[in-house]
Image 1: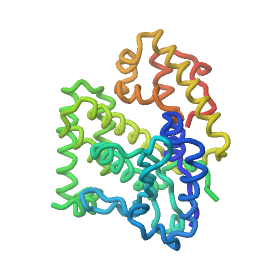
Image 2 (image 1 turned 90 degrees about the horizontal axis):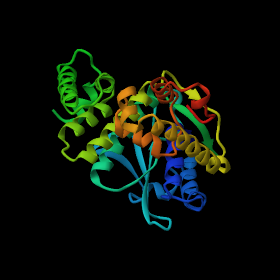
Image 3 (image 1 turned 45 degrees about the vertical axis):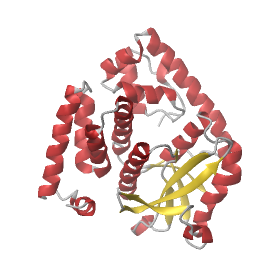
Length: 137
Length: 174
C-alpha cells in the first residue's frame, strides 16, 4: 500500500502542532509508526483491533472507502486523536491509502462534522481533485 | 428513505430524491439569508451541496442547530469544503519534509499575523467579512490556524482591502 499525504492532512498536522495538541515526539514515536502500518495493510494485527482501526460510519451507514485510525490517549494532554484514512478505491487509486486529515475527538457534534468532511474528501479523491503533498515511506 | 439509499441516488440528476435534496438546500439557503450570511457564501454552499452529499448534510446540521458557536463552526466547515471542492484537478504540490514542518507552521503564523494586523488597521474581521462575502467565522478560523492559506482567500482579502500582490505573497499559499 502506498501512503499519500494530502494537503488536508498536512494542514491538520500544522494546526494540531500549532495548537499544542500534539508534539513532534508524539508524531515520531506514535503517529508515524502507526500510520506506516498502512504499508502492509491489512497484514498487521492492529487492523483487527476496533479500538485502533475501524470503518467510518454515520448513523451505522459505513462511508465507502472511509476508515479511522484511532489513538485514545496521546501525549501529555491525553487527547483522542483521529486520523481519517481513505483506502479501497478502484482503478488507479487501488493500492493507495490517503491520509485525509486529522483531528482531536471532542464532542459528538464536532465528530459528526468531521465525518461529513471525510465523506466529501473521499468523493474528491474519487474525482481526482486533491493536492498530494508527499508519500510516507 | 434510508441514508444508504440517499447516498446511492444522490448524484442521479433525474431522481426525485435528488430534486428533494436540492429543494431542501434552497430552503436552508433562505434560512441562511435570514441569519445574515453573505449571498456569495449561500450560493456557493447550495451549489456545492447539489454535488457533494457531505456539504448537503452540513447544511442540514446548520439548519437543525440552535447553538450559535456550533453554527459558526458548521459555516467554517462548509466554507472549507467549498474551497476544497473548487479544486479543478489533482495537483502534485511540492513535497514537504517532516523536519521542515515546524518552520512552515511558524512562517504561516507570521504571515497570517502580519496580514491580520493590516486587516485590523482597516476595520477588523467584521468589516473584512462584509467586503469579501466570506463569513466571519471562516475568516476567524483562517486567521487563527496554522493551515496553509488558500490563494482564492488571499485574493479576496487583497481585493477587499486594496492590498498589493506583495502584501499577500507567501511561499506557503496553495
